[in-house]
Length: 252
Image 1 (cartoon, rainbow, N blue to C red):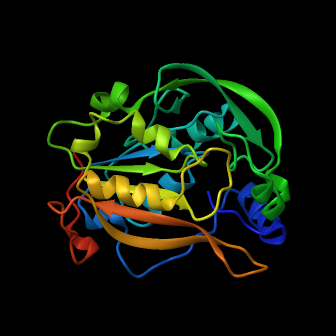
Image 2: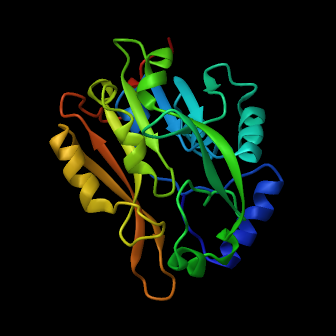
């Protein structure tokens, strides 16, 4: 999740308490529409910001959201309640094993992680400091994938897990071959303890047969101008993007 300077975060928090959100717009079709995606697996959904943006941008097919933080999960369920094609999996984290673990709850919710936060993160966003720890079930993507993705579905996996991306992928060994695209938030500098940085993921997806499709800046240090985080979209070459959003498959 993007880090914001304190003033911007306070403004956005005030807007969101009124039930609204602020997102950047692009003239390009979003990936799930351009790639004719049948189902989006929204890992690290928080309260559903990504899924709501997909709907606002014209994606009408299935979404399955995963969220481990209890307070965010309750809000997520509430936000998805009137959308029959937006499913919310039972509260859990996704990782490389099945069982239980702890998640650190951040003051701003979005920065919560299964990993310890590094000082650089808290310095950039003081309201992201951890305020407590919650226990959460954890499972693997491989364990739940067939519950939501049919054999002929085109699937996009979105991962926004605050430094825990490698573990999510480690639990998707069997599933990855059936995924058409992966949208993932990556870091240039360490923000969480033991997290892997973007070069490791570029190598991983290349070796798995994906092509880097697009990059989008997420967070830039306001003091130095250094880019710290970006979203990367990796696509299998056999899943070509369509030139316009008009060709989206009809909902199944």
